[in-house]
Image (cartoon, rainbow, N blue to C red; front, side, top):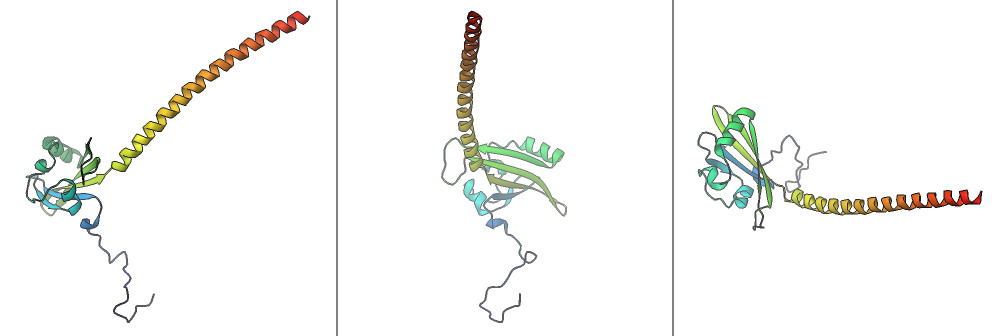
Length: 170
């Protein structure tokens, strides 16, 4: 592709030149200082989902169900931790199910914890649909089993009658 001399023409961006921005993703992202577990960065999605506007606040004030002692043990042992939050009620702006992946991140001599929050509501909806379909299939399988038993009983009865008819003919 030849570069255009027109300055208003759209320019091609190669994958090498393009740097994705964490603020442009649909997932929530936050970075915490590992020592104090205070937020040092959050993208707009995370701020919207967790109704948080303050930096430098403890992550446990944003996610009250988070057990920080367990988080730190798992990070030290495995380097990651997974937390699933489910909301029984629909809240505006907050998904019904959020999966948060915590990972240890070292930048130079500084330790951080990154939080990647994904909306898993569609998965929850699919699980609900699958559960409904499974119940219907199980119900139909029970009906089929009952019909199969009835057919086997009828087949046995007819076989006995046929044998009796053949014996009486002789």
